[in-house]
Image 1 (cartoon, rainbow, N blue to C red):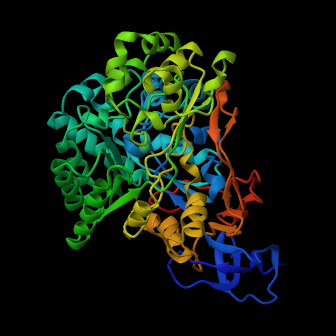
Image 2 (spheres, rainbow, N blue to C red):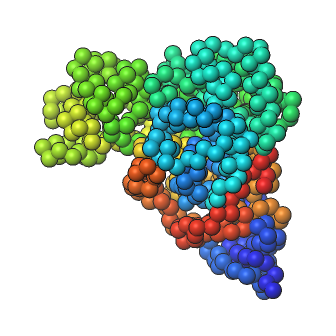
Image 3 (tube, rainbow, N blue to C red):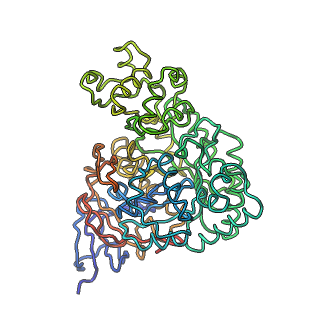
Length: 565
Ligand SMILES: [Zn+2]
């Protein structure tokens, strides 16, 4: 009889608590870490040689949208490929419960634009064996999973359930409706939710980039401040849970005051999304960091979700929707493919399209690349920026982009680099101790973007290449800090008694592979993915889910009700 189920032998242990690294062994029994240190000749049913490797806690991803994908992909890839062992779902106020049977199609349609999850994949891949939120949790619990899942109560389905979709978009709840909304939040928390979430992008503001499928704002965008405060009071009364909120920026006095009020009323951690340095607007992230510091001085539990991932976007106009904060672009990119093509080719729309520079790109249109075109006679434009294509054809860069796309039946592919290329700004952000790395947006926007690689990218680029922080600090940020913020009771660090969620990797070899297309979604749909290399193994609850960068097929993940299994 072996002494341990698994022994990870001879690795460099980084515990996630920022203690100095040390060389040692980890003994695992019954899914938990039984012993850390020198295990000598102690036997393991399985021994993993971690010589030359880092042994650290599995990563905790607080910002994902795997609410649909988890039903057809137990691995919640690409996150699990990159060392993530626990995820939080139901972000930004979006999700699929509670939803009545006759509202299921509409609930899925909503997610096709705001998070760009293909309708055919949801339709074919979701079992819909729930109506209420507690029933949804039971369904998630029954599914095989390779990651642990912590669920928010998302506010959009909650308000829609109580008020009806049209009313929830039009007016605040009555007193009676508000009582019912709060009662349902209580019910969700009783069932094990980790708190609640909301995207609140002012529909008339400059950054309302994620919209409903018809181009209208989301329910959460238009919900009233008072409803938010009522929901914050529920968590305060219970003294549990946390709040995630996506705002346009922390430079609106109204938004800041509201945010602080949520933290004050609830006494709970409130996660501000997102802090993103933009190369042409450094005062924005600097202002947010100063605000987070002032919250700390005043004892408010406000944390920032930082964008550390490369947010470059690849897209075709067949489905692109992330210029939506510009009304002219939103109007021109809704409808069927044929309708989009007609609108994008319409000369009378061009002046408006040229006058609005969308938020998601670096600074100007001309920095976008034309990565591929289908039509032979347009091949000369491949590899050019829009500026270069415009010069060649004697057109404005936007006309060049749209004329090529329309002539190519919207099949031309473009690449817009992310707005956070400046490494000095990245360092300023990482120097703020209350920022959590990300944002993966896992499961969302997968035809454009693959943020799930952020942990590998963080270690490869920011720690190894740019030496911005130590590995001890990096693992605290990637695991323990998010775990603490989200109310995980016993995860995010390596210590005896904790569940064995562990990554073993080769720091020198860790690498994010190039973007590729995977045709692996149900309903015949496709997505973009980026694989990882350098992970010797990734372990969830003591079982190996990834070995030498490949899925083992094991599904030891658990639903974490109340933050624990
Ligand atoms: Zn989100």
